[in-house]
Amino acid sequence: MPNNIPAAAEGLSEINRRTALAMLSGGVVAAATTVTLASPPPPPTSLHDALSACYAAENEYRVCDARESSIAEALGEKLFPKWTAPGGGSSIWSHRPTLFRTSTSLEAEIARKHAGIEASYAQGGMNKRAYHRWKRTLEAQGTEGLAALREQEAVIVASGHTEASRLTDEAFERVRTAFYAVLVHPCQNLQEVRAKATCLLRVYNLLGLEIDGGDLAACLTSLCEEA
Image 1 (cartoon, rainbow, N blue to C red):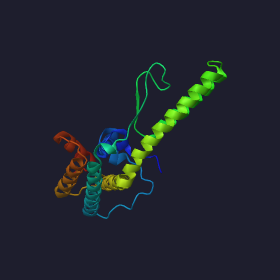
Image 2: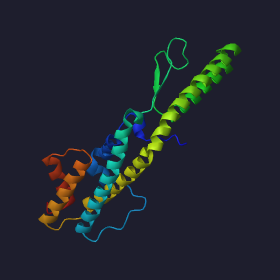
Image 3: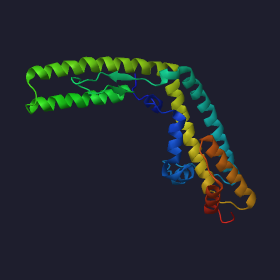
């Protein structure tokens, strides 16, 4: 089964992750106006078309997000896999118990520790007996941890959350693309300025972001001469 469980498995909710993504480069407006599209769609023929496309993308995102949230709520704490490696003075992991959230991160740490043991043995830092003991311990504890995490990840995949999260991510990107088309479209009159402002506020609200009057005014005056 795949190990690429979404960011929720690392202890961060999907909506918070997407909000953080929207705020990169100074906010959703900056992110939308600086995003590079691999295959940008042809620009709408009018601001009305751009606004309609953005509204449709927002609605699609709401549907996807609602389904993902419903599954996440049903999973509860099962959405956050965890396995704690043993700690202590003789632990190969750390003096303090080490928490792992995904099998992928644990696999990487196991590989790093195996490499460290090999390097230490090659440099004379441990004898053969110690070498085999550390290798056996790492193999046994690593296998236990991977089995525990993969079992928890399988529950998430079986619930449909992984697929729901992927679809919501895709819908989120469509909102950003559609919002970009709105922002770069010139306004011809005050009515269009108001329509664009309404869209901006709605998208900010959708993503759980806040914008004050000064931000809104600065954004609008930077987008059209009539604002």
